[in-house]
Length: 165
Length: 165
Length: 165
Image (cartoon, rainbow over all chains, first blue to last red):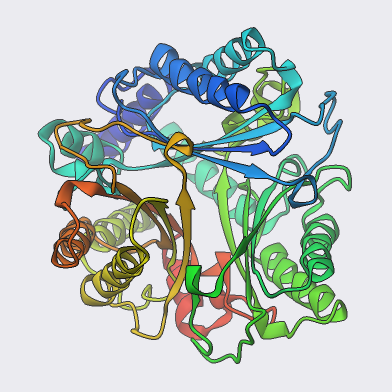
């Protein structure tokens, strides 16, 4: 019975640890969708894509070559964005960034990621409130980067997957 | 040892509670993608977007100002939808609604959400079987609504996040 | 106290079982987004969509009628894909496949799915490295296939949902 309780405690400990420590093995393969209004000058769309990628590299240990981004433009009546919810002021240039990446990033990393993307976008001429970001997570075994191989088949990724069960 | 078991039981209890009770703090920030066929009259696309938003407000406690929707049209050969699976009858107006929102909605809320969206879409002239809906969830710390701040940094959201670990 | 430990052990066992055994009840309703470069000949876009659907049918027990796919084309400057990360060689035809489906597929099924999609795409003339795939999961109660009914209201799906808590 002691062993059962030990197992429980170890799992608990592992779980808490995972929330606190960045998992260096869960670095790669984000996929980003960037939705911009048709009125946005093209160079600003590209600047936002750069801002997102640099933010991921700087705060989430994403390798600089690991860039996968899809950019779509929307006519005003196809992109319905409240101008002030919850307590911001958006302009007609408001854009939405959706990032899908591996689980394992800490809350601290995510918070710094939001900050960094907004800062870099502002340097490119955006209003800070115009950048909305959402994150979704999956596992190494949920990616194939090419040639039919699972990203989870890499030794370090399998390890990550095992721990994240 | 009693304390260990107590911890386990409390967590269990909390987990069960979370499944049953709507979490009033996990209200905000849905992001919806609506995919409609090119043949759909524009006013029906907009009516579907309204139906989705009203459904979220009425069943999931989403604030009425909290509206973030992206609408895309597809040519017939770019939108492959089975006309009858699993046991419905779809018309060429069949549309797909994808909602990303905060975890914490109960199964009952989700069921009512589906019902409400379909009912309102039918009022706008849709066939009920033409509305397919999918839900995906993330956490308050996975959103930034603007200005580089994490939605999870709001006191009530941090609390939610802590509980949902 | 024995009963508490028994509950814990049973849950553990159930969890491990779920990771190993394909869940025949979690078969249906994948939604796939396929993002292709504008330069891709239309028949290859369709062939990729076929490859994805056949891969799902053959490896993940998806019914052959259960096909829901959205295909979008992107101009080169709207689809930023690294040509070699992590260790592949992509051509300008590199495409991205995003599948949302019910949780319950095993790692083995996912690995076979990646392999099968790439193999079939290669038969249609793609380079194997040009097919990137990502998977995201949700629950039966997160789908409505039409008419405002939750997919989780089907007896077998409710059962699945109960077990996956």
